[in-house]
Every structure is written in C-alpha cells, then in structure tokens.
Image 1: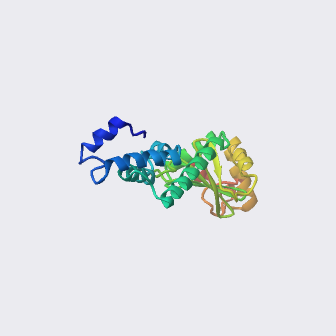
Image 2: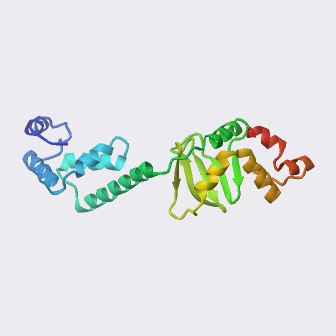
Image 3: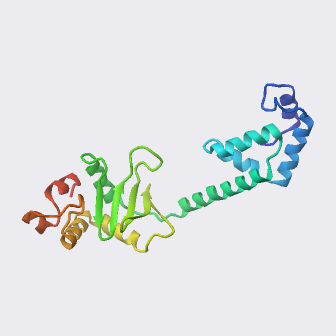
Length: 217
C-alpha cells in the first residue's frame, strides 16, 4: 500500500476512517513513508496474504493506524512470511504422482466406509475427513507414525519420513489388488480391514470377499 498525498488528505479529513484515532496526521504519514523505506516490501508482502492470513491483516491494520510496526512485530512478520514462502516452495517442488488407482479405490470404499484404510508392507494409508484443509487427501503412516500425505496428486512427506514411501505408493497404484493380496498372504491379515483372514477362500485369495467388493478389487 503506497500512501499518496491525496490519500493522506482524504484520510485526514475523515475522522471516522482508519486514521480516526491518530492525533498527528502529518506524523503518521511520514512515519509510514519512513517505515516503508526502512523495511522495503514488508507491508506489500503482508497485504498480499492479508485476505486469508488474519495475523498479516492485523499487522496491516495497525500499520495503517499508527504508521509503523514495533521491532517485535517486524520480526514476527518476517518469520511468518518466511514460513509462508517455505510452504509455497514445498508445494511447488513436491513430487507429482499418478495415484489415480489408489484414489479410485478409496472413493469406492468411502461409499460404504467412513474412514477407509489400506495396508501395504509397513504403510497404512487412510482417507482424510471430507471437511477441513486436507479434504480429499490421503494420509500415510509408516509403522504407526505419520509420514506425510498425498494431496492433489503430490506427495508431501515430513522431514523424518523414511525413504522408499513413494516407490511403495507407486507399487500400490500400479496394481492395488496385487498389493492387497501380497499383504494378506504375507501377514495373514486383510489389507483393507486389518482383520485376520480365517476363511479358507480368503486365505487363498489373500483378501476377504467383503473388503474386496467394498474397495472395488
């Protein structure tokens, strides 16, 4: 936001505006100009994300009212903007995966199961809730520990995520039924519900008939 002389005069004449509580209009105006010179691009960066970031919006509002931000606020603003930039870089650089078969399998299972899960080797894949920031995503755990998520065709793994997860996801996507059968025969449990396979036909197939139908396998 660049405060021009015209804008300054307009706001100064309107005591009910954003500067309504300021006693010295001229001081506020020049404080804003000085602050922007000392912190180039900071206010503009905050304004750019203020529509969805409440902290940024509050800082912009305080800047408009007072003409500056405290040293502590500047430090917090810079730290937040660095995090926002890091998240954007993570999204932009996240590896793209063709997991359409897994997504289709979970969509089919969700028709009958609220929170379907699928097991393969040491992975457990679960569907994110329908509401929330991760709606439509798939969560991935390794040995019971959260390792990351698949969202919009991209893999977002945490820093401590074990290697090899992407390869395993691609193996499942290549043939979900074969992956389920491999898990069932290796562990004796169903890859979909996690229960022990007890019926002879289920043991031979490596998956229970009900789960196979529900997951479209």
